[in-house]
Image: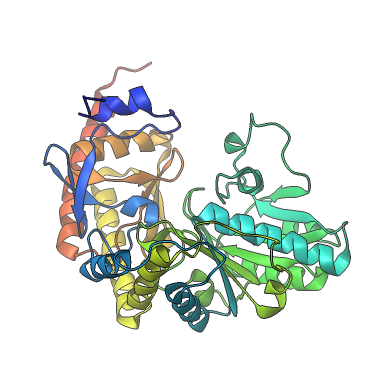
Length: 411
């Protein structure tokens, strides 16, 4: 262990190869900028996959980190703590919910939601009401249960038989949903905007129809707001702009601005089915994470900040429109707030990774949402000067990819 010098190549030598990280290694961040180990700066349009909603190194979060870090990090689930109780009260005051369960991630929050739904159905109706309806191209996490419920088979294949009673339907197809939701359905889980599946918003009538069908058949409606939640769409939770209230809501990602924390929010009536010992977690709701998340919630729920998300959304989509006037590479720009997807034209189908790689070489951290969509999920408080600088750099990256494509010999 004498040689602890590490670089990008070290990843290929010591890590399980489930990721393929960029060629550069990020070292520090401030606001909407990141610097790598070579001192080169990047404009961050990825936000740690919609996580760092308040940017990097936010002074008020650093203050909480220091204060709570010097007091108490972890105590275990045999005890409660003041930060987690304050966090629960804040979230419940902002939403339909009366009760909260805290976990470490969106996957764990969804795991809890799906288990609760099946438990409620078992207690109320017996063992035959267990079917879960999800939608193609959905993403709900990487645990075995959530990856099976998710509508992308590439993530669940090769791990043996999946849990029974999971049905996948086309997203935004209300007729298919109405035909499928029935006496055996215990829950429908849906993203108000499919994030990983291509940044595809749900039609309001689709969500309303799911609510009505669930009510008709005694099923629970679960909104997965792991990516859409905590201000991302310009509302604290996306459901608040749909006219539809779920029975259970899951949230994570931006909730801790990078500190791992997730939550399942629900009503008194449903929470009563999770009695002592039925479900649990070691780290979930620890005072360290809860204190940070409480400050995040306080800051992002400010109406001025949420209004700023909508303003920045207009600026970002305007920049994308200008890029498209110049290069003509996007067939559609969609999404809401600062969850925006730009779908590539047929000429560049499957090339999203090429644009992301080129962007990194020109000093922009980017994301994709499948092979055909560039995804923009920057800080909710990104300075417009940083945004414009990022697009200037992105234009150079796009010019490079488009130019190389034009020069490539015909096959």
